Length: 283
Image (cartoon, rainbow, N blue to C red; front, side, top):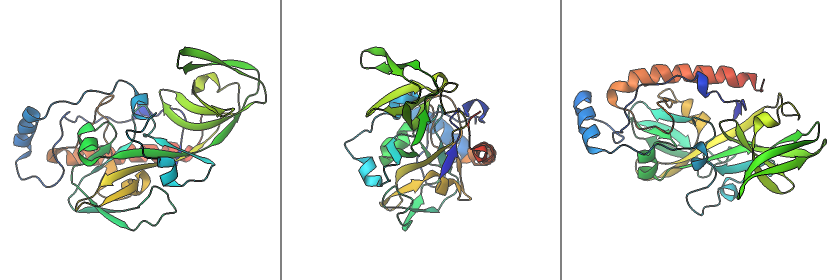
Protein backbone atom coordinates (compact mmCIF):
# COMPACT_ATOMS: atom_id res chain seq x y z
CA UNK A 1 0.00 0.00 0.00
CA UNK A 2 1.39 3.33 -1.02
CA UNK A 3 1.11 6.46 1.11
CA UNK A 4 1.36 9.33 -1.33
CA UNK A 5 1.74 13.05 -1.27
CA UNK A 6 -1.14 14.85 -2.89
CA UNK A 7 1.30 17.31 -4.40
CA UNK A 8 2.93 16.12 -7.61
CA UNK A 9 6.47 14.79 -7.48
CA UNK A 10 7.02 14.94 -11.21
CA UNK A 11 9.26 18.00 -11.17
CA UNK A 12 11.88 16.13 -9.15
CA UNK A 13 11.79 12.82 -11.00
CA UNK A 14 14.75 11.50 -12.96
CA UNK A 15 14.45 11.16 -16.74
CA UNK A 16 16.00 8.39 -18.78
CA UNK A 17 17.09 8.86 -22.40
CA UNK A 18 14.98 6.10 -23.95
CA UNK A 19 13.92 5.64 -27.57
CA UNK A 20 10.29 6.13 -28.44
CA UNK A 21 9.84 2.72 -30.04
CA UNK A 22 9.80 -0.59 -28.21
CA UNK A 23 11.14 -4.07 -28.81
CA UNK A 24 9.01 -7.10 -28.08
CA UNK A 25 9.49 -8.58 -24.62
CA UNK A 26 11.71 -11.62 -24.17
CA UNK A 27 15.29 -12.57 -24.97
CA UNK A 28 17.04 -10.79 -27.82
CA UNK A 29 19.77 -12.30 -29.93
CA UNK A 30 20.54 -9.39 -32.28
CA UNK A 31 23.16 -6.84 -31.17
CA UNK A 32 21.60 -3.86 -29.43
CA UNK A 33 22.74 -1.34 -32.03
CA UNK A 34 21.28 -3.39 -34.89
CA UNK A 35 18.06 -3.87 -32.96
CA UNK A 36 17.74 -0.11 -32.46
CA UNK A 37 17.96 0.50 -36.21
CA UNK A 38 15.60 -2.34 -37.17
CA UNK A 39 12.89 -1.48 -34.69
CA UNK A 40 13.03 2.24 -35.28
CA UNK A 41 12.51 1.57 -38.99
CA UNK A 42 9.62 -0.87 -38.55
CA UNK A 43 7.63 0.42 -35.56
CA UNK A 44 5.75 3.73 -35.89
CA UNK A 45 5.89 6.17 -33.03
CA UNK A 46 2.90 6.22 -30.70
CA UNK A 47 0.82 9.36 -30.51
CA UNK A 48 1.57 11.24 -27.26
CA UNK A 49 -1.28 11.42 -24.77
CA UNK A 50 -2.48 15.00 -24.56
CA UNK A 51 -3.86 14.93 -21.03
CA UNK A 52 -3.55 12.71 -17.94
CA UNK A 53 -7.34 12.63 -17.74
CA UNK A 54 -7.56 10.65 -20.99
CA UNK A 55 -6.24 7.60 -19.14
CA UNK A 56 -7.74 8.08 -15.68
CA UNK A 57 -11.42 8.86 -15.97
CA UNK A 58 -12.94 5.98 -17.92
CA UNK A 59 -12.28 2.29 -18.41
CA UNK A 60 -11.83 0.99 -21.97
CA UNK A 61 -14.50 -1.68 -21.62
CA UNK A 62 -17.56 -2.57 -19.57
CA UNK A 63 -15.81 -4.43 -16.76
CA UNK A 64 -16.89 -3.40 -13.26
CA UNK A 65 -13.49 -3.01 -11.64
CA UNK A 66 -14.91 -1.85 -8.31
CA UNK A 67 -16.98 -5.02 -8.00
CA UNK A 68 -14.05 -7.15 -9.14
CA UNK A 69 -11.68 -5.61 -6.62
CA UNK A 70 -14.11 -5.93 -3.72
CA UNK A 71 -12.64 -3.16 -1.57
CA UNK A 72 -14.77 -1.88 1.34
CA UNK A 73 -16.95 1.21 0.86
CA UNK A 74 -14.28 3.35 2.51
CA UNK A 75 -12.19 2.94 -0.65
CA UNK A 76 -12.71 4.35 -4.15
CA UNK A 77 -11.76 2.13 -7.08
CA UNK A 78 -11.31 3.70 -10.52
CA UNK A 79 -9.52 3.19 -13.81
CA UNK A 80 -6.01 4.42 -14.53
CA UNK A 81 -3.03 5.29 -12.39
CA UNK A 82 -2.71 8.79 -10.96
CA UNK A 83 -0.10 11.45 -11.46
CA UNK A 84 1.22 13.85 -14.04
CA UNK A 85 3.65 11.07 -14.92
CA UNK A 86 1.93 7.85 -13.82
CA UNK A 87 4.07 5.18 -12.20
CA UNK A 88 5.08 1.97 -13.91
CA UNK A 89 7.69 -0.76 -13.69
CA UNK A 90 10.25 -2.39 -15.98
CA UNK A 91 11.40 -6.03 -16.05
CA UNK A 92 15.18 -6.06 -16.41
CA UNK A 93 16.08 -9.76 -16.57
CA UNK A 94 14.77 -12.92 -18.16
CA UNK A 95 12.67 -15.39 -16.15
CA UNK A 96 11.40 -12.88 -13.58
CA UNK A 97 8.36 -14.31 -11.78
CA UNK A 98 6.04 -12.27 -9.57
CA UNK A 99 3.32 -13.67 -7.32
CA UNK A 100 0.16 -12.11 -8.71
CA UNK A 101 -3.49 -12.42 -7.73
CA UNK A 102 -6.67 -13.55 -9.43
CA UNK A 103 -8.34 -10.28 -8.44
CA UNK A 104 -6.99 -6.85 -7.46
CA UNK A 105 -7.37 -6.98 -3.70
CA UNK A 106 -4.54 -7.22 -1.14
CA UNK A 107 -6.56 -9.77 0.86
CA UNK A 108 -6.74 -12.13 -2.13
CA UNK A 109 -4.05 -14.84 -2.07
CA UNK A 110 -0.93 -14.02 -4.07
CA UNK A 111 -0.84 -17.49 -5.59
CA UNK A 112 -0.71 -16.80 -9.34
CA UNK A 113 2.89 -17.32 -10.39
CA UNK A 114 3.39 -14.87 -13.26
CA UNK A 115 6.58 -14.82 -15.33
CA UNK A 116 6.98 -11.50 -17.12
CA UNK A 117 8.78 -10.80 -20.41
CA UNK A 118 12.21 -9.25 -20.20
CA UNK A 119 12.46 -5.53 -21.09
CA UNK A 120 8.67 -5.03 -20.74
CA UNK A 121 7.64 -1.62 -19.40
CA UNK A 122 4.28 -1.74 -17.63
CA UNK A 123 3.33 1.91 -17.88
CA UNK A 124 -0.05 3.18 -19.01
CA UNK A 125 1.50 5.38 -21.72
CA UNK A 126 3.30 2.40 -23.29
CA UNK A 127 0.54 1.88 -25.83
CA UNK A 128 2.26 -0.93 -27.70
CA UNK A 129 2.56 -3.02 -24.54
CA UNK A 130 -0.93 -2.02 -23.35
CA UNK A 131 -2.49 -3.17 -26.62
CA UNK A 132 -0.33 -6.27 -27.06
CA UNK A 133 -1.08 -7.62 -23.57
CA UNK A 134 -4.53 -6.03 -23.02
CA UNK A 135 -3.23 -4.39 -19.85
CA UNK A 136 -5.71 -2.92 -17.39
CA UNK A 137 -4.68 -0.29 -14.82
CA UNK A 138 -6.79 0.54 -11.77
CA UNK A 139 -6.19 2.34 -8.50
CA UNK A 140 -7.91 1.88 -5.13
CA UNK A 141 -7.75 5.01 -2.96
CA UNK A 142 -8.82 5.26 0.65
CA UNK A 143 -11.53 7.92 0.89
CA UNK A 144 -10.57 10.88 3.07
CA UNK A 145 -13.00 13.50 4.46
CA UNK A 146 -12.28 17.16 3.68
CA UNK A 147 -14.14 19.67 5.86
CA UNK A 148 -14.67 23.23 4.70
CA UNK A 149 -13.46 25.87 7.18
CA UNK A 150 -15.15 28.83 5.47
CA UNK A 151 -17.84 29.50 2.89
CA UNK A 152 -16.43 29.31 -0.64
CA UNK A 153 -17.44 29.08 -4.29
CA UNK A 154 -15.27 26.51 -6.06
CA UNK A 155 -14.96 26.21 -9.82
CA UNK A 156 -15.22 22.75 -11.33
CA UNK A 157 -15.55 21.59 -14.96
CA UNK A 158 -18.99 20.32 -15.99
CA UNK A 159 -20.66 19.00 -19.11
CA UNK A 160 -21.36 22.54 -20.28
CA UNK A 161 -18.12 24.20 -19.22
CA UNK A 162 -17.03 25.53 -15.86
CA UNK A 163 -19.58 25.54 -13.06
CA UNK A 164 -19.50 26.87 -9.51
CA UNK A 165 -19.89 24.61 -6.50
CA UNK A 166 -21.24 26.64 -3.58
CA UNK A 167 -19.84 25.31 -0.32
CA UNK A 168 -20.46 26.35 3.28
CA UNK A 169 -18.28 26.14 6.37
CA UNK A 170 -18.76 22.69 7.85
CA UNK A 171 -19.58 20.99 4.54
CA UNK A 172 -17.68 17.72 4.16
CA UNK A 173 -16.36 16.56 0.80
CA UNK A 174 -14.84 13.16 0.14
CA UNK A 175 -11.39 13.08 -1.41
CA UNK A 176 -11.72 10.16 -3.82
CA UNK A 177 -8.55 10.08 -5.92
CA UNK A 178 -5.78 12.14 -7.41
CA UNK A 179 -5.78 12.74 -11.18
CA UNK A 180 -2.85 14.91 -12.22
CA UNK A 181 -1.59 18.47 -12.54
CA UNK A 182 -3.06 19.35 -9.14
CA UNK A 183 -6.56 18.07 -9.89
CA UNK A 184 -8.43 15.41 -7.93
CA UNK A 185 -11.90 13.87 -7.82
CA UNK A 186 -14.04 14.85 -4.84
CA UNK A 187 -17.45 13.56 -3.83
CA UNK A 188 -20.16 15.85 -2.46
CA UNK A 189 -23.89 15.22 -2.01
CA UNK A 190 -23.76 12.09 -4.12
CA UNK A 191 -21.98 13.73 -7.06
CA UNK A 192 -18.37 13.64 -8.20
CA UNK A 193 -16.43 16.79 -9.05
CA UNK A 194 -13.00 17.46 -10.51
CA UNK A 195 -11.43 20.20 -8.38
CA UNK A 196 -8.06 21.90 -8.33
CA UNK A 197 -6.63 21.09 -4.90
CA UNK A 198 -5.11 24.56 -4.65
CA UNK A 199 -8.60 26.03 -4.33
CA UNK A 200 -9.24 24.02 -1.16
CA UNK A 201 -5.85 23.79 0.44
CA UNK A 202 -6.02 26.89 2.64
CA UNK A 203 -9.77 26.88 3.32
CA UNK A 204 -10.35 23.26 4.33
CA UNK A 205 -8.92 20.46 6.42
CA UNK A 206 -7.02 19.13 3.41
CA UNK A 207 -3.68 20.57 4.48
CA UNK A 208 -1.57 17.82 6.03
CA UNK A 209 -3.85 15.04 4.77
CA UNK A 210 -2.17 11.81 3.68
CA UNK A 211 -3.49 9.40 1.10
CA UNK A 212 -3.35 5.62 0.85
CA UNK A 213 -3.65 3.95 -2.52
CA UNK A 214 -3.07 0.60 -4.18
CA UNK A 215 -2.08 0.63 -7.84
CA UNK A 216 -2.91 -2.55 -9.75
CA UNK A 217 -2.23 -3.74 -13.29
CA UNK A 218 -3.66 -6.84 -14.93
CA UNK A 219 -0.93 -8.42 -17.05
CA UNK A 220 -0.47 -11.27 -19.50
CA UNK A 221 2.02 -13.76 -18.07
CA UNK A 222 4.30 -15.87 -20.24
CA UNK A 223 2.40 -19.08 -20.88
CA UNK A 224 -1.01 -17.43 -21.20
CA UNK A 225 -2.04 -16.90 -17.58
CA UNK A 226 -3.36 -13.50 -16.55
CA UNK A 227 -2.75 -11.97 -13.14
CA UNK A 228 -3.26 -8.78 -11.18
CA UNK A 229 0.00 -7.34 -9.85
CA UNK A 230 0.28 -4.68 -7.16
CA UNK A 231 2.83 -2.01 -8.01
CA UNK A 232 4.49 -2.25 -4.60
CA UNK A 233 4.87 -6.02 -5.00
CA UNK A 234 6.40 -5.60 -8.44
CA UNK A 235 9.12 -3.11 -7.53
CA UNK A 236 10.01 -5.15 -4.42
CA UNK A 237 11.53 -7.67 -6.86
CA UNK A 238 15.27 -7.24 -7.34
CA UNK A 239 15.01 -7.35 -11.13
CA UNK A 240 12.11 -4.90 -11.46
CA UNK A 241 12.49 -1.14 -11.11
CA UNK A 242 10.20 1.89 -11.55
CA UNK A 243 9.66 2.97 -15.14
CA UNK A 244 12.00 5.62 -16.54
CA UNK A 245 10.48 9.00 -17.33
CA UNK A 246 11.05 10.10 -20.90
CA UNK A 247 8.47 12.80 -21.62
CA UNK A 248 4.82 13.55 -21.15
CA UNK A 249 2.71 10.82 -22.73
CA UNK A 250 5.77 8.83 -23.82
CA UNK A 251 6.76 5.31 -22.76
CA UNK A 252 7.98 2.11 -24.38
CA UNK A 253 9.68 -1.18 -23.59
CA UNK A 254 13.42 -0.79 -23.10
CA UNK A 255 16.35 -2.08 -25.17
CA UNK A 256 18.98 -4.54 -23.93
CA UNK A 257 21.72 -1.91 -23.85
CA UNK A 258 19.60 0.28 -21.56
CA UNK A 259 19.29 -2.21 -18.69
CA UNK A 260 22.14 -0.84 -16.58
CA UNK A 261 21.04 2.76 -17.00
CA UNK A 262 17.38 1.98 -16.30
CA UNK A 263 18.38 -0.06 -13.24
CA UNK A 264 20.48 2.75 -11.78
CA UNK A 265 17.92 5.45 -12.45
CA UNK A 266 15.05 3.22 -11.33
CA UNK A 267 16.72 2.54 -7.99
CA UNK A 268 17.39 6.25 -7.56
CA UNK A 269 13.76 7.05 -8.36
CA UNK A 270 12.52 4.35 -5.98
CA UNK A 271 14.69 5.73 -3.16
CA UNK A 272 13.38 9.23 -3.82
CA UNK A 273 9.76 8.07 -3.84
CA UNK A 274 10.18 6.10 -0.64
CA UNK A 275 11.71 9.09 1.08
CA UNK A 276 8.90 11.38 -0.08
CA UNK A 277 6.08 8.96 0.74
CA UNK A 278 7.52 8.27 4.19
CA UNK A 279 6.62 11.86 5.08
CA UNK A 280 3.06 10.93 4.15
CA UNK A 281 1.54 14.43 4.10
CA UNK A 282 1.18 17.56 2.06
CA UNK A 283 2.90 20.81 2.90
